[in-house]
Length: 127
Image (cartoon, rainbow, N blue to C red; front, side, top):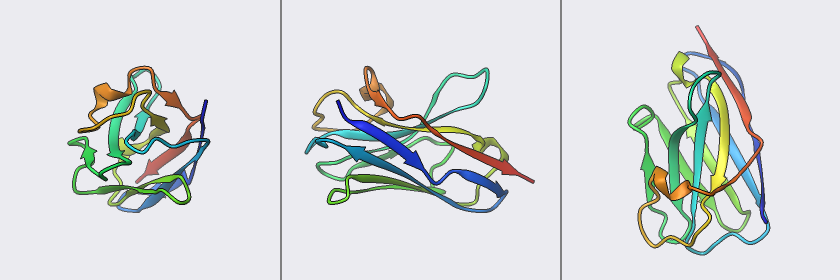
């Protein structure tokens, strides 16, 4: 089973930017869904963005649409989430996930049932 290792989290002021990375060890599916989720204490894990490694199709939650870009470097087996104009509500533990199945289509949040997860990287946004 693949391991996912996140990095790039940290503390930033509102309006700032961060680039989160997810390194994938093992075989990355040709048509698979890779995604980012986030969670704050006491809340459900929330889907943020995802990408299909086969066709490059991307999906974003409304809360980060137009402020974030997800991309994948297939050679490096790394998924990047660039987040700009960060807001207080972006604070949370960010998790990388790989959907269990091969996916020919949109990588919506439901595709990640039974996914493989990383350990997370903390993002803290302050004013």
